[in-house]
Length: 88
Image (cartoon, rainbow, N blue to C red; front, side):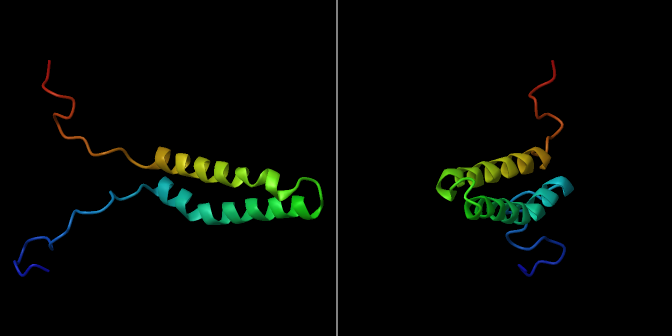
């Protein structure tokens, strides 16, 4: 606290904006989805269907898709009454 009653603590308002429910859900399932994907790739390798060295880029694709879903679910920046410029 900064010692001034009625004022926000120093540093309040800094940091990333709060995430929406959808973005939090995508963050929550990112780890399990990656583990399932990794397990499936190792299973394909163990069964000698496809070697792992040919499938590991799929992990990068899954991470990218999850980040894309997270960005789509996150709210946009707050817009003020004159965010688009002066009225016409």
